[in-house]
Image 1 (cartoon, rainbow, N blue to C red):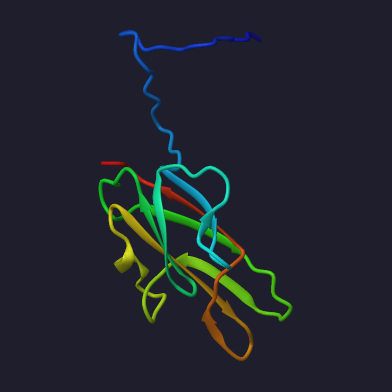
Image 2: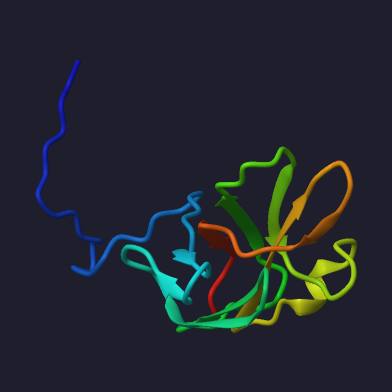
Length: 137
């Protein structure tokens, strides 16, 4: 078995190496909207967060995507005493069935809802984590 050790790998032209067949998130952010809209940790490619109301946050990215068809991975944590389910994902007004209507190349709206056996409503969750995957413009 051989071991390859290197501190720097360059292309034959001396520049950075282009990796193929790999995909990394182009935007990553953890935030809270419970008492104020604030990032938690170090975001990647995030220009700003906007609290549009309870359970509705817009994330503006620094570098735009090449189209609005990028993938969204979102999760959230809620500390509630009642039983129910928390849902975090792309936001759409009035319906979660066509949420891509609120995605643009530079802004993504994320919605948070809490549903119990008797009702469902938008809610601000303790921590929301979002990663976006796609090609940048």
